[in-house]
Amino acid sequence: MPTWDTEPKLLSKTDRANICKQIADLGLVLPSVMESLRIAGPNVNKPGNLERLRVAAEMAHELSPKTSAITTLGGSAGMFDELKCEMADELAVWAKTMEPLKTVLAIRATRDGYAPSGKRALAAGPSEESVDQKRL
Image (cartoon, rainbow, N blue to C red; front, top):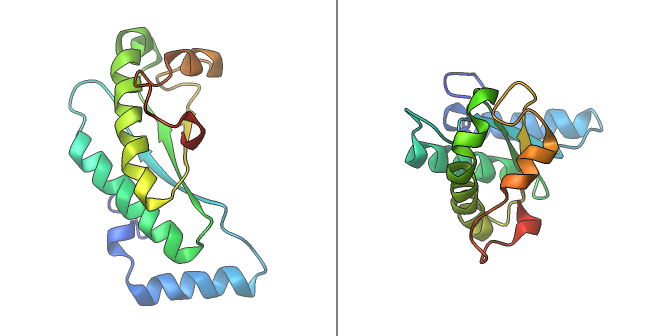
């Protein structure tokens, strides 16, 4: 999240090395990192989202090569039907952005966010046939 102490752009190589050491010293693993983004609707910074995803994926791989970048889709549940096609198209762009980074992008549609249920979120699906849906 922008402005948080753990924002990838704010973490130096030393900070990242310290995080890796703490995780290892505690016997923990880092299965994922989370980046919270708005995917569709008014005032969404799509190029900024792609940059945030790219930087989060790079940081995740630096901290743990098998880590997945995870995002939460937030927004208004009342707008899901109106925005689901735009969301599906943008998810296809996100998946293509993550592919060369060898990062699995797990999407979590929040209960109080765009999709009021998981079934409705899955119903949107990517609109492009070329997207490897296993990487979403």
